[in-house]
Length: 194
Image 1 (spheres, one colour):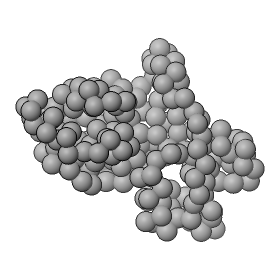
Image 2 (tube, helix red, strand yellow; image 1 turned 30 degrees about the vertical axis):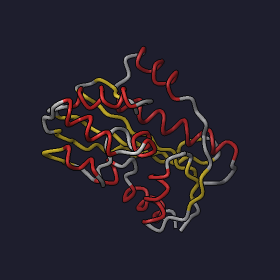
Image 3 (cartoon, one colour; image 1 turned 90 degrees about the vertical axis):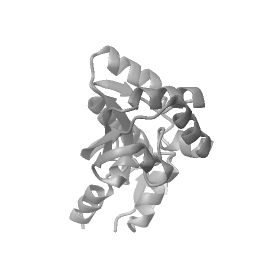
Image 4 (cartoon, helix red, strand yellow; image 1 turned 135 degrees about the vertical axis):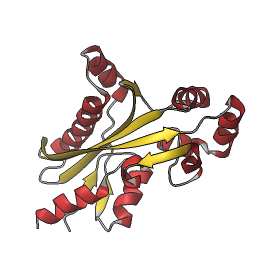
């Protein structure tokens, strides 16, 4: 299978690619996402458009440096009734995000883009719908106490393959998408190039 370059610091995304036997190496894009998100929000972009744009920016930036390589960029966001919810930067933000999602349905959007020589050649966006159970503040704090800092900042505020699955009464969608990488579609695209 083609060697893929993952333009991401996410250990989770790398582990998913390895698990699915996709030969890859990691090259960070080092894009400062917050000003880009803010600019897109100011223009009225939806969470899905923001996710797609960030995935493409990451892939394009790394693929400009690595000529003739296939570079995979990825981005995941939470969409709560049209409101973009980004990864927490501290435990207080994580708690506030969980309170906001408490008892509600939200969408987790994961976008991926493959670029070559600085231009996108393929992209895909998948969405999962998650219904969070109703919890007290104490329950939410207890959940956060079980989660390591690394996990908290890597996976947004829940680890769907670990403790986080207990937060939800209903999950409609692919687990890999929820973890940040719709890997089946990536694999199909790479196989189509052979």
